[in-house]
Length: 356
Image 1 (cartoon, rainbow, N blue to C red):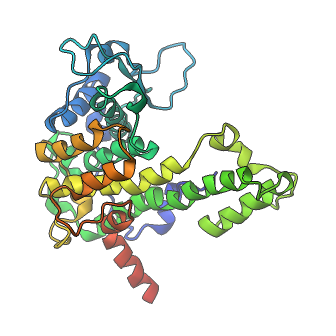
Image 2: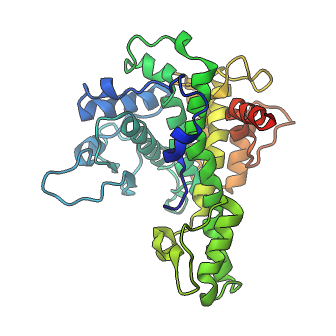
């Protein structure tokens, strides 16, 4: 109801109705045990050179909904700050996932995202406790999402046996554009919402927005940034924004906006390190098809980013990650260039439609 994702309108804006979308791995995932899904996720990270999950992780994580127990099933990852992650028997560390996992394609991708948090915890566990957090609050979400971008590719799903009989020659530009539209209705449409949430909060904290203006300011920002308005007339006595958890519970939201930008920078850098994407020749191997599974060079680059935790300013950590091996011309700042590179084919197609 916040219009932070527009995925539900996909049938209305599907570029090519007869081309289909990327294949769904759910039928094969249905044949797996829940723990096998987690083992496949662990294998993805191990293939990049990261540690396996600890004994405590396997013992204490909640991977399925418990019967007759009321649970908050929103997936999450937890660092209990019990010690470094390199112990041989896992006894000195305590990292867990809580997820009411079901056997679907989307849950398979989600658990990779959550395990990405665990890997980040492990990599900066050696830091003093004050630095044992993400370099930027958005980095934690971005790391998991950048991994999810690779896991969600047909190339990866086919390699791990979840798309039997899949032939890359079956992919067409029409089906790719359908997939990119699906992604854009989640990734692109979130950006204005992610930005306006804290613009709204900050305007209140600064005193620019008074209590009697709470509804009016919310409506203005949604119209300006999202291009949406309420379907029913609102009054100054209304307070729609308070219905959003992060507003009423004072949870900063800019971290999510940051994560939706830098996740594509992380992903692009990993793909370059893996030799699967060349910014100078982007059409040869399109960015959205990249999967860096089993590529330790990509893993080594990511490890360097993660081991620092928050020990240095995040801008420096990002610059070192993005510009390693890139020469003097690299721009290591937070930038939308990577997300534009990812969606370039869709942007070009949309420009063509606008000309008709």
